[in-house]
Image (cartoon, rainbow, N blue to C red; front, side, top):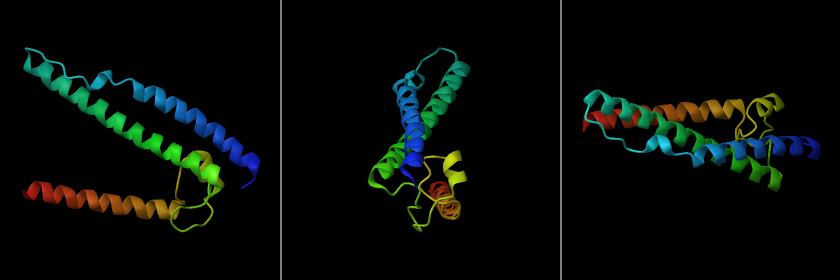
Length: 126
């Protein structure tokens, strides 16, 4: 990867990092609100759950963005963290923080899905 390409991705990633950091500062949605009405309590709990999931997703994305910026600095950006093959530039254009090539990402997603299914089975068995 040329230095010009790396600088292009660095600019994109810096922008995404700033955006996510700003969003993560707002945590108003996870405040516990009380209400005398049971339906309002359910609504507040659902909104809080959604806010927590959103914060978790964006926090994970921020970690991926920071990791990608570190890979740019150490010269390993654009190389799959698993198989060490170059990541397709089209993938990097779509997901600049991607640590894996498409093939390795699919394997990681499948393994994560199987782990979550196994955890669900264990939780329901208890």
